[in-house]
Image (cartoon, rainbow, N blue to C red; front, side):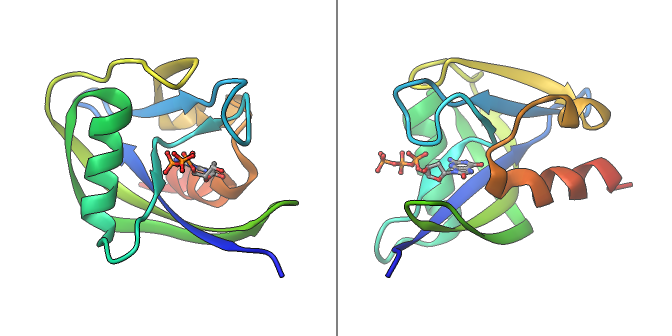
Length: 131
Ligand SMILES: Nc1nc2c([nH]c(=O)n2[C@H]2C[C@H](O)[C@@H](COP(=O)(O)OP(=O)(O)OP(=O)(O)O)O2)c(=O)[nH]1
């Protein structure tokens, strides 16, 4: 049976209404695909704490996570992902690149120009149609 992995991802919007998009590197799993930054929730950890921890680890800045925006279950070849996207705001510092190949800030209407990790597609669609 495939393992189910619980992953939190941040929809970080800046003051220009742009959203942070990160490109997974060739060395990461699901390589060379765009994602909302985040990572796996650890045993006993709540969603907000997990997301704030992952962003500090991967981008050396501080966010405050708020409401759940989208939740999606997607079956990859190797595992099943329960991807929970939370809205978030940058509260200290600016993102710094470490594990990812690149990050960009994009307006909602341009999000679909990227090749997203398949599990992220429903969240992207919801963002594009959000008023
Ligand atoms: N962070 C993140 N991961 C995503 C998204 N969409 C998606 O399919 N994934 C996949 C990629 C990875 O297989 C998994 C998350 O693992 P990760 O490698 O980013 O997290 P992690 O840092 O906790 O993992 P690790 O150190 O244990 O390898 O979920 C997304 O929007 N954000």
